[in-house]
Length: 217
Image (cartoon, rainbow, N blue to C red; front, side, top):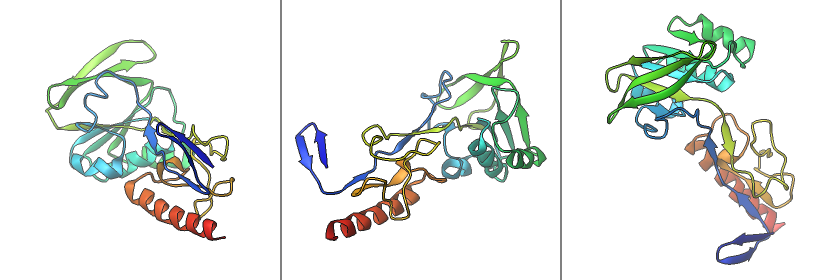
């Protein structure tokens, strides 16, 4: 392999791709301003900060539904905000969501703005059918918004050398090997169910060991 970078070219017999991934934004005003201060993209990471509080989950896919179910065991109430009139998730997951007493669904609704001071206090919702908007206010720190509109793995540098899954992640075997001999992938750039630091570290250890074995062969 030849890796091109700012300092020149580097030759390597093996490469481990670890460029990570970025959660897709929902796009409402105030999303970036309150990221980490009321806006989260990971229920298993930040859910405990909202124990006994009200949370909103944006998204209608399997990930959004599964995280809503997780949050329902922590938060006092969970509201799923769907921009369409139906879920994209599988029927089995949707039925579990609808069966939970403390989960409600707002269909054909979008969050268009989040505002407040140090912590957000007001959410502005839009009725996607009528176009009308209305604002709801809360005590500071009383609610959270969890965004699940997808994740974008950063595969651009190697996408011509690997196979990609429908979620955009790189497909590997258990040794973190891609379809190109000597090219391995680790962390959030892979297609995987759980994108967390602990799984990325595990991937990295396996990929490094596999790359070493590849070089010895």
